[in-house]
Length: 358
Ligand code: GLA
Image 1 (cartoon, helix red, strand yellow):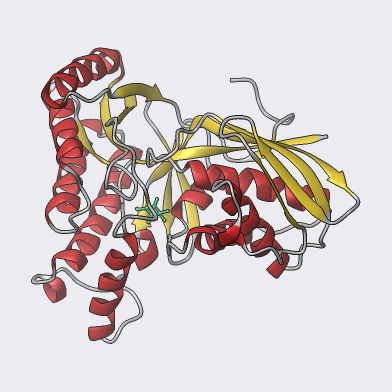
Image 2 (cartoon, protein in one colour):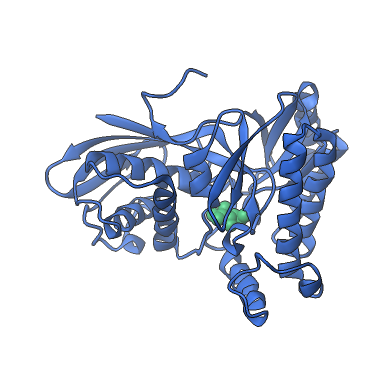
């Protein structure tokens, strides 16, 4: 039996930019999915989840239709099997047990963690190798196959490329990943709003289409090379262009250790996602506001939006107290039950046994 782990991710800044060939700044987190697998000789992939219950069985050659698989989490597994098979993975079967500490619907990429851990296990069992970027692309495809949502590549690439103590500046055009050390005096606080997000039900695809339409009108494939002036009257595209600039600025500030100046960028990102891209919710707005009121340097929704988590930056010695104050105030204002944790940037996916001690 062999075990592979893949972390969830939190995005510090740069949302809804990845599918526009823009920039993102995520980090892998310590919450992760682990897949333990043994090869079978009958070309069937069987997976059981210890957290979500149920078992799925699909053909190892990818011919089982992923959107018909039940229970629902099995669709991601079937999507990975199909995406890898399309890239030439031999149809070797496995028995897999999946367990995960990444909460679902939190915007922390539980599905990417599952896809990546399973993909590593499936490739290993078949003696099949893919470069990191191709693995990330296969898992991104798996998500599309499983859910129909045309996600970008950030989550899967962050889960594969994470580096302990570092955030990752990813250029989603070249797919170059540049690890940037997080100063130790800076803490990343993640707070779940208590409202889960359903990516499938969200307006994700509609937002993506709106961006592509603006790019198309300008005679371009994506919004990557568009200037702020060109989209001054287009709120969706304006968000993407301004967010790209904030990501690059945040990466520069981080690498120069200028942590105080990072806060306003996070706040501006939240405002842009709320007002221009319109993917925030009343709860996420209150939570970001309370984190800043409690002393965070800045805070913003993270991931696709429509629920899930807010990420804040704080001075390390103040982080716990800030999280406690903000969650208390948020709970009394909304009646919801938030939960917070201070996260440490983790290493990317790989075999479980090779894992360095924390
Ligand atoms: C989801 C998608 C990513 C990205 C974010 C928004 O997490 O999976 O590709 O688009 O939303 O930044």
